[in-house]
Every structure is written in C-alpha cells, then in structure tokens.
Length: 158
Image 1 (cartoon, rainbow, N blue to C red):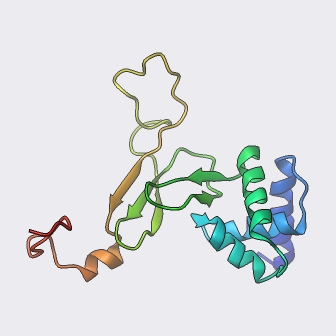
Image 2: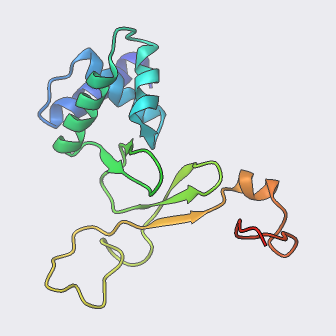
C-alpha cells in the first residue's frame, strides 16, 4: 500500500466513525496500525516522530475519542498500563507474557461471540467476554529451564 493510499485509508476510517480527521488523529491511528496493543506513551513517542509538537494529552484525547467512537478497543491487563488496539470487530482475547509483558491476540476460545457463556448469567445479556491468558511468550520460555528442571517454577523462594 502506498503512503497516499494508507493516509486515505486512515482518514476514511476516522471519518467513518464520525470524527474529524486531523493530522494528530491520523498520526495516532497510524501509530496503532504499526504498534498493536500500544500504551498511550508508546503512541505518543511514535506520533512525536512525525509531529514533534504533539502533547501526551492530545494523544490521550484522540485515543479517548477513538474508543468512544468504537474504532479502538481499550485493554487493561492486570498490572499493566492501559493499551489500545484497532482490532475491534471480533471478540478475540489476549495472551500476556508474565515476564516481558508482550501481548498477543488469540482468537475466540470456543463457539460464537461472546465465546464463553457463564453457567448463570444472573439476568445479564452477555455481549462480550474478555479472557486474558497469562504465561511465558516463546522468547521468555526459551530463556528459562523447563519446569521439571526449574527449582523454583512459580517464582516463590523455597
């Protein structure tokens, strides 16, 4: 995709959500295309490479506007900063590395969205299920001995 076509696609996505396609918003959206599961700080650093005067507050404003308009999804894994992603059209879940913090998308666990149906919904109409799988990414897992050889497999001191 050419740079002009990419800019046009970004502009079209923002406008389709009913928002003005400002330079700052386009840069924030493009940063999310390049960095899925990015924090506001990461987005800000990326945007500043092209628009040096962009403030962290303007990035937060754009991300909030995008989330409210439904073109980004906020994810908040326990113990991690809030992250944003553009993959919003399905009910996917996330794998989070307990060592390095890497986040990876994983498709729906089973069945149709919302993927998991509680045994008793207590009268709620379930729209979405958020599942986070915690473990070691391949890089971190390969850097550690296998569990059978690890004298301290769950991080507790004996």
